Amino acid sequence: MSDDQDTLLISGHLNVVVLVKARMGTVLQASRIRIGELEINGMWGGYQGPGTKTVTPSEAHAKITCRLAPNQDPAGITAKIIRHLEAHLPPGVRLAVSPGAHAAQPYRIAPNHIGLRVAEAALAETFGVQPLTVRMGGAVPVCEVFKRVMGVDTVFFSFSTADEDFHAPNEFFRIHRLHEGLEAWARYWELLGERVTG
Image 1 (cartoon, rainbow, N blue to C red):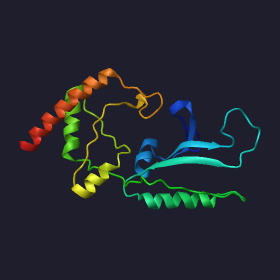
Image 2: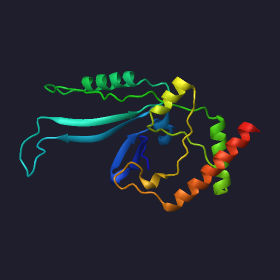
Image 3: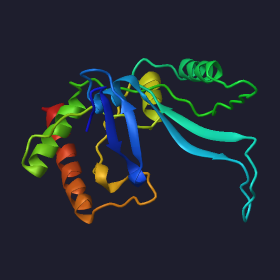
Image 4: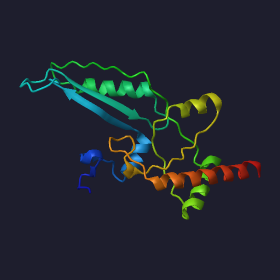
């Protein structure tokens, strides 16, 4: 859904409705994977103990993470977020930021990589239709290290679908996906062997 202001109404996890301001002519998914993403993982403030207390909270806390797009630097993004928060502090409010120690550089595999071409062929053989290639964000920091240190690329070849809510409290996995995945992986290794040795 959208209005004349290009504001997209999106129903997300846990049936939370989120308003997202999209750039003119930009598909939301494309925005997520090309310019990165900032996620609020937790928010709290005020009295947290048992029972209730009618007290105005003196503190508010939030935990955030960012999924970076290619060529974004974790330290640079952290600095920009801090500057943005500082620029919007109401009078009398103090800001304390504790950046995590687990930042990682973004990773991207070349779209014409042999591993991706083999994955497409294996999926086409397994499911009987040509797969659609979609660039997505993820959080497997070691992939960038493999590429930078060893010159080795990583192909992500998983079989969870978006409606299975991976990483959510109600995550699940359809049993038939396990069997399809095993078949596709067997085809993948066979096809990769043929292309590398042939």
